[in-house]
Every structure is written in structure tokens, then in C-alpha cells.
Length: 497
Length: 116
Image (tube, rainbow over all chains, first blue to last red; front, side, top):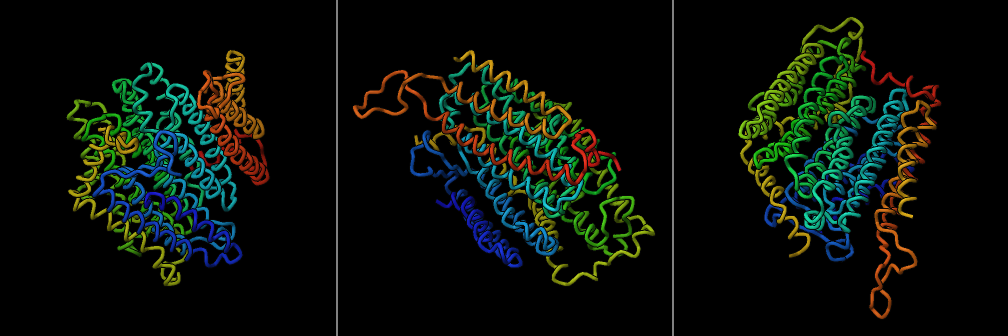
């Protein structure tokens, strides 16, 4: 029963805020309450799953292959938990930074419906239902992206909307074909019945799924909407997008390519592996050319997606564990970096690296707060990114896939180059003349400063904890990988056999 | 009937993809609508077409083969509703973008992709 709550709770709070539409100044507190409750629910869910291993709920009490199943296994649960943490962080950060115009147009209810879509995608056990949750998530993200109505926002939104609608149409077609082949939409039932279908047709459908989810996850060569749109909205919006949205695509890829499309691993997963190499390389090279704080970070999302997909493509227990670990680490680190960029924008009024400077001299501790996620992203020990990279690369070496290992090592180095560039331009070099008169941090109200910095500090602490105390997180990732690779656990739990 | 629908779906996909590659806003939206309809018809056709057979088990409990599968229709209905909402949003967004940017030519919308 508790599985339903991560979906119901955001819906309820969105409705509460719609009833309170006329008093927008209370939205932020209602939203914060909702996000904290969601975090509590997620923790309880994780606690349950750690004892039960996997838990299912049949909507409307229809037995498994006929109704819609909700399934919480290790992967879904950890994704729900991480999303809830990011959601709380974004809610706190939004209190300080979101302007009253955005609040009046329903910023906070939209955040809640976005979370409903994300949690629904993680928990559903039905392919068509996954499509529906994707759409719930997308429509909220469309509005959040365009909210504010600036020129570049609308341009970015058009590219984002068009490509995501294309991906939805492909996904829908793929679901239709899958239904025509097997006569079922329940993922567990699909996993059973797909074994009877001709392998070649299954491969075609699996490629349709790869393209549809690939657009959402921003893998090579389908990522173009991401660097065109993620740097345009409000910093709180781009932080939650950067952390969660593409990762829903990665989650969907991990789900279908470990549960359903595993008849011809040498073909499908090899393609994923090749794509992962290009994704890493193109993302990091794209970032090298940029001089806008958020655009550099956006390109790095793409290159980091490559590492997660690499874990999936290698398809060994250690590799999948590495992919899952990477997913956990990346969501926290990436959101944090976008928060940092937002704070700098708030005091300096720009994201342009050439115009910024001198932050370290004024705020050395804040500089340190940037360095923790930045070095973690690049994979410097002992931060969380090191263990994530180490695991996938070790898995690659075990399978003698040297090309991809070399690519991923080079990409790690280039990531460090980009982070050094940000460090040099924003923190290290002297203040440029035109920026000198700009606001100082101390001019902001105390409450605003607390709400802005506390999410960054908490997320940085989590990064350090994952890095220094990696063992339990890694053990969890290993268990997740075992569960993903043994599809019978999922099938038996859903179909109650 | 199957062949006819298959051809129609093919034409809709081709037209949809052609249209979303055009530069004009309106044509892109039309392209997206075509693609949505093509996917809906694909589900309809691939869910096996039957003529004049019931979708549910009759009262006497004896199921006549071939029976109609009601699920594809339910899926399409959901997809149509979602598609309708999303397309309505897209139209408003494109109109707003036209007013703000002052052009309906997608090739001129490159400020978010340019290096600064």
C-alpha cells in the first residue's frame, strides 16, 4: 500500500495548492511540507524493501497481467528516495530564489505534478502506464521550462517539446508493436512471453525503445535538445531537471534492457555500449568549447549519462552495479552544481564565465562547496564519483573491453579540465571591472542566504559520505544489480507464482 | 483492410517526419499531430482487426472466435486524450514564441545553440 503514496502524495499537494491558488505566498510552505512528507514516505518504503526485497501492488485489485501493477524493487525504491532528497533540496532552494510571478503562475503545484510523474515512472510495472507517467512528467516539465517567458526560454522550450513529443510518439508505437507481438503490457508478463517471439522482431522493437528512451536520456546522437534548453530556465528548475529528468530515461533503459530485451545481448547491449562511448566523448568535448556556466554543466550531463549506459552495455553484475552507483552519485552531484551556479547568478547576475571572477577571494568556503561536487564529478578520490567511475571501469577491464575503458578514462580527464576551467574563471581569477559593483552575498537577507546555501551544504555532505563510506552504498548497488539480472525475482513477485 | 491501414500509417509517418523537418512552426505542429495519429492507428491495426465480433464474453460464457480485443481501443483513447492536451500546449507555446521571438522560422531560432 505504501507504494502508492509516492504517487498520491504529490497529487494531493498539487490539488491543495490549486485550492490555495489565490494565496500564492503560502505555496512554498505547502510545497515544502509535501516534499518532506514524500521524503519520509520514501525512507519508509526503502526500509520495507530492504526486508521484503521486492514489493508489488495491484491497482484496483485486478490480478497481475490484467490490471496495472506497481512494483518497488531495489532500483525503483532507491530512485524514489534520491528523487525525494533532490525534491526537498529544490523546494528549500526555491523558497529563496523563485520570484513571485512564477509562484503566481503555479510554479509549486507544477513541481509536485513533476514529482508525481517521476515517481510514477519509477514505480509502474506496466509499459503503457510508463508512457502515461512520462507524459505527466513531460507536460509539467514543458510548463516549468517555459515559465518566465523569456526569448531564449521559449526557443529552448520549442526544441525540448518537439523532440520529446517525437520520442513519445515512437515510444507509443513501440508499445503498440510489443502488444501486438505478445498480447500483454505488464512488464513481468512481457518478460515471460517475449521469449516465444522471433528474436529478430524483438530486436527491431528493442531498437525503437532504445531510440524513444534514448531521446529522453539524452544519449548520442539524440541529445541535441538538452544543451539547447537546460541552461535557459530558472536555476531551481534547471537543477531539478538536470538531476532527475534524463535519469528517468536511464532508469527506463535499465528496466527494459535488463527485464524484457535480453534475448540477444550480443546485439542490443553491444549497440548500447558503442553509443555510451560516443555519448561520453561528445558530451565532454561539447563542454570544452562552452563559456557559459550552465551550458558546460549541461554538456556534462550528457557525458555522465554515457557512464551509466556503459554499465548497462557491459551487462555484467559488476557493470550494472557500477551503473546504479553512478546513477545515485550523479543525481546528487549534478543538482548541487546547478545550485552553485544559481547562487553565483543570484549575486553576480550572470552565468558567463568571462564576466565572472573573484568568488574564491570573497567566499573561500563557498569555493570549497563548489569543489566537492566538481571534483566528485571528475572522479577524484575519495569522493563519490571516484568509486562510481572505478566500478564501471573495473567491469570494463574484466570483460576485456579496452576501447571503452580508454574512452572513459580520457573523458574523466576532460571532465577535470572543464571543472578546472570553471574554477579558474569563476573562482580563481580576479574580479572583472564590470562585475565589481554587483551585489555582495552579505547584502541578501539572512533567511534567503540560509535557504540558498543549506541544500548545497547538505548535498555536498551526502557526496562526501558516499565517497568516504562507500561500502554500504556499493553493497546496495550490488544487490540491485543481482536483482536486475535475475529477472525471475521480478516476474515471480508480480505474477505471484 | 489491413493493407489499406498499413499504407495509411506509412503515409502518415512519412508526412509527419517530412513536416517536422520543415522550418515553419505550423508545419512542425502538423507533423507532430500526424505522428501521433500514425502511432494510434498502428496500435489499432496491430491489435488485430476483427469485424462484427463482440469484445466481451457473452452471458452464456461461450467465447466466439475471433473475438474483438478491446484493449487497443482503450490504449488509443488514452493516447488521444494525452496527445490532445500536449498538442494544445504545443500550439500555445509556439504562438507565444512567435510573439516573443518575432519569427516563425525555426532556422532563425539558434540563440540557445550559439557559442557565446
